[in-house]
Image 1 (cartoon, one colour):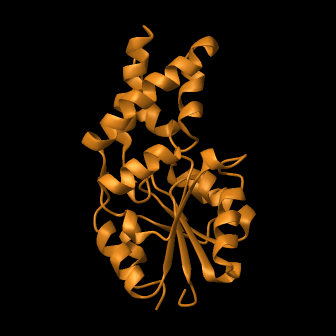
Image 2 (cartoon, rainbow, N blue to C red):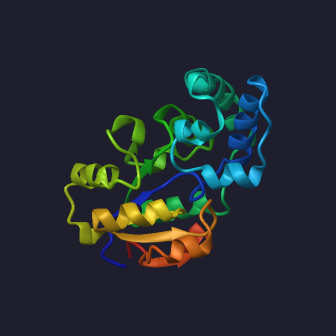
Length: 214
């Protein structure tokens, strides 16, 4: 993969572990609405489609707007307390930048919270561009988010790598026709990932070091 010039990363489950913060905010909403809290395992399985889709199956339709307000109000605090980078992520990003790679973020997480995470965890300066699904008509698995990022850098897709953690990331990468690596640290099972036939499956995002932008 020595010809890669741009690496696009997903956030949650790929670079950042924010599952505890997501579970905390989700169950805060459940308690506020008088609903039964859900297990962290269930909530984790729902991550990746944006916060509205996270809540929608478990709150009454007439309460969705209120639920989102409650969730987002709580989440801006829980993210600061309960999120962390996966091991060696900062070292990986520093190494990729030192080799001349352009780095970008493509996340279904709303922009507001993506930037809270990137700033709080002190990795925002590594990225040349950040694009989130709330700025688009469609989120992943639609390829729009990847295509817009690639267009911004005016690169041939053969020089682009996308790294995510979910089956929908593999689907988005395939639809965008870019080489896609899936990390098994996220919310999709290995079986779900394998069904999408990504270019490569790895267990830790730090394994990218030494493979790109040489």
